[in-house]
Image (cartoon, rainbow, N blue to C red; front, top):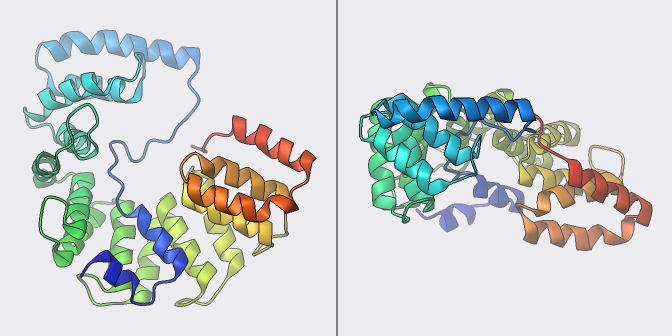
Length: 308
């Protein structure tokens, strides 16, 4: 069953948009952007100086940590090629975190040529050591047929294994499997329950998923106040689809008092990640926003960062 077939089975437009959040390979999925002070930067420089000798001597943990510094640009400019070099050295020594990271690099073509077969190989190696993120990413491969035949039942099993290890994104993915009846019996009530647990773990994409259910109200009682609160939490963490829907709710006064300035603010913030949809809504609501409110929203958006 293809994803287009699933969508044809009555999914709402909002939930169709939500499907875009299933497939998110993440190196450090729990990391959230934060401002970096001079003191922070100095600590990273010192860490870099300490890690290099150990990594050069073959210490796998040091190699992995060094890769992360190059990946995230802490103490050094962001350098995916150097990050990939150190991840590969650690991965070849059996470091599960590095194996997952290397799989992500191959999947995204980041610092290395894009190669789904090698991505799957390294995800599988990390998954066999119990890495929850690798289990989830393997599930995504089986769900989409990336380098392997589509197998929704296998995807659901992998998502369950990752969820059992506390991975909230996998739990959210499993919720979608139950929502659409893909690889598991269709059970919207269970899907909502899984979204609820993952959202309670502060997983932004799950907050969006549950908020979308409450917003649409096709399968759970419609509750715009609950939808607004969940979408606000998702948006504040930097989740673009949550920002889009939150902006629309502010513009239309759904679950909250109409506030064109707040609507404009969230649409501007979302535009960097979701330019097409953000600009569509900005065009729709442009006449509602006064010049002063627009300037204020643009100024705030220029300084905005996701909450930790």
